[in-house]
Image 1 (tube, helix red, strand yellow):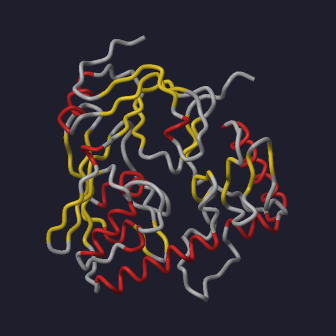
Image 2: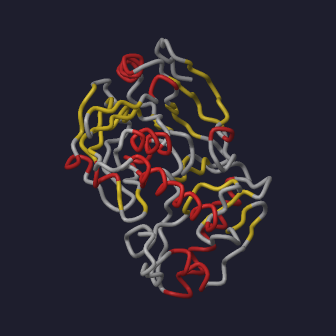
Image 3: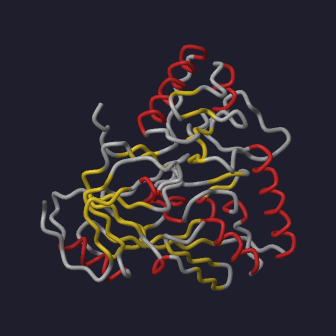
Amino acid sequence: MTQMPDTRGALTPHRALADLTWLRVGGPADWLFQPADIADLAAFLKALDPDVAVFPMGVGSNLIVRDGGLRAVVIRMGRGFNGIEIDGTRVTAGVAALDAHVARRAAAAGLDLTFLRTIPGAIGGAVRMNAGCYGTYVADVFVSARAVTRQGALVTLSAEELAFRYRESDLPEGWVIVEATFEAPRGEPEALAARMEAQLARRDATQPTKDRSAGSTFRNPAGFSSTGREDDVHDLKAWKLIDDAGMRGARIGGAQMSEKHSNFLINTGGASAADLENLGEEVRKRVFQNSGIELEWEIKRIGEPGAR
């Protein structure tokens, strides 16, 4: 195994990843690195053999790690990367700050980032995926992000450089976002808090929030997320296409498309990563047969298949 650089953070070989993902599946990473701070991360990446793959991981809310695990150094940011600072109408959040915490802190300061309140995961993933709901996306409020390159340099990235699209952005391979700054519209703290409560109630009524899921499984072919409005159209929503293909509640092993919201893939207990991915692929096949539309995965799938 490749010699690893010295670090001040925690560096663990053959680390199982299942307990770090919301779906609770997947094999081990060759290494898991939890940097102490930005300087530790930069020094590590600079010294690391360039042939060794690097995978930045957040809280694992949008991830299937395959059963064979990951031949890479998984970099997971912790406590030193979850700060939230407010300066006027600008909110700067560490990559590990939870989206919900950022929304709440901003609202208390009279700043409207309420769309983040119901998005599972942390700010790093939100930026990477241009997360959004209720008609607002990260791209709409994004000012800049700081990242450490694969060569260990600290750089600032603009919206233009990240080239935000629906559920996508451009980030060079192996670069690790460490924080992001947003420009938030002003609002009354009480009104913002009330809006977030209403959003939470709506989410809990329509989504399987008590099950092991990874949020939406497939992107909406319409190319936008739910606006939350009464006049929202459903023709090109992933859940509608899944329903029309008769796949609500479909199962393979311990994997199931939720009865409550058919675009949520859930681990009912004992599912393997292969069960989850195979069910997702079966859904894609049935939807294509039924509608001619090819669903695209929103959940990120990484790693190698396990032994059959």
